[in-house]
Amino acid sequence: MKDSDWQQYSPRTQAVRAGHRRSAEGEQGEAIFTTSSFVFDSAAQAAARFAEEQAGNIYSRFTNPTVRCFQERLAVLEGGEACIATASGMSAILATCLSQLRQGEHIVAASSLFGSTINLFNNYLGRCGINTSYVPLADIDAWRAAITPATRMLFCETPSNPLTELCDIAALAELARERDVLLVIDNCFCTSALQRPLDLGAHIVVHSATKYIDGQGRCLGGAVVGDAERVGRQVHGFLRTAGPTMSPFNAWVFLKGLETLELRMRAHSANATALAEWLLAQPAVQRVHYPGLASHPQHALARRQQRDFGGVLSFEVRGGRAAAWQVIDATRLLSITANLGDAKTTITHPASTTHGRISAAQRALAGIGEGLIRVAVGLEGVDDICADLASGLNAIG
Image 1: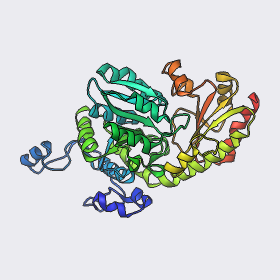
Image 2: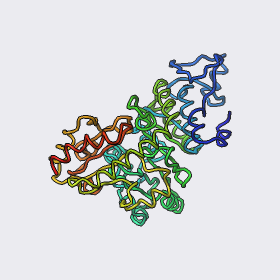
Image 3: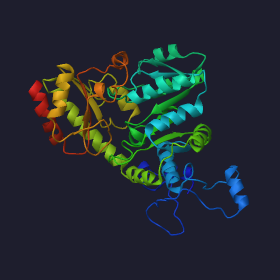
Image 4: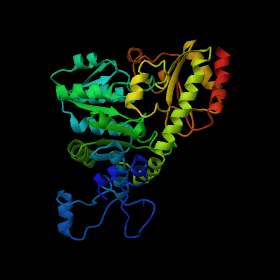
């Protein structure tokens, strides 16, 4: 079945079946092709494939049937023409930037980015002569003012990590069209199950498949989704040469994750909403950041551009780092780890982990204080999650 044919089906059906081409063995489940290379019928066929005159497998660094199945399925789910899978979420961002940008060009990015993305932009792309300016995520006027003649890309996460701030994707896409620049959205927190940035005008979507696409904290992977030229040809060309490749086994795990993605994202969202409302009532908590709360400043925007509110929230406690660490260390059920998107609830202190390697000034610009705690709400009973947090909160309350 062609990719376009899948559009007649619902996302749940697409997530289970899109991209699967049965081999001559007639397998029901997707096969894992654990091979480094592929055999050609003739020297002429080999030459044609290497010259990209004939489609087909060559070498698993950039062509593998299991990885292709994952790519085609995610492209359908995001509404894109092409998807390129990578070894990690960070390599997806790197592949996007280095395939689209040249020395002397400029990125405008949200100040509320994941710490490793900021380090990539500042410390590595900067060495290549690609400079970055940072603006408040939700301030369209600030985005507009930061664009220069050298600007080629706008880049943001929405919702942001860890404060769950949102940008108006459609408004930012309109600005990108006006100024003839690319809009790249990191859709890690929502996934295609809750938000489709391409439908709202974004040019490229990037993912850390390590997170919710896997859903159980098993494998590393990333993905870039967009049109046939920028992603299908240019990002693919970077992957073919530079090789940040997804393994066939990891691609198979992510395929299994996609089958249950929508069901899990709804369950994560329901648990996170209940936990956020519970946290509002705790005396030790100063503020809760979650777009599903009516008190969130962009709650109306979240209702408009997302199908649900996601599984990540953060909250601020009185007493700074010492109090935040006390709450975290008092947990017995929650996993103290910086990863997210797992069926198991995770908890971390962003200022000393995910954003610990950026400067204090950059953390302040992003609104990440010492009393901030991030929780990626899993699929356990929400009453058990609340009870586990209660011991630490009561101790500082």
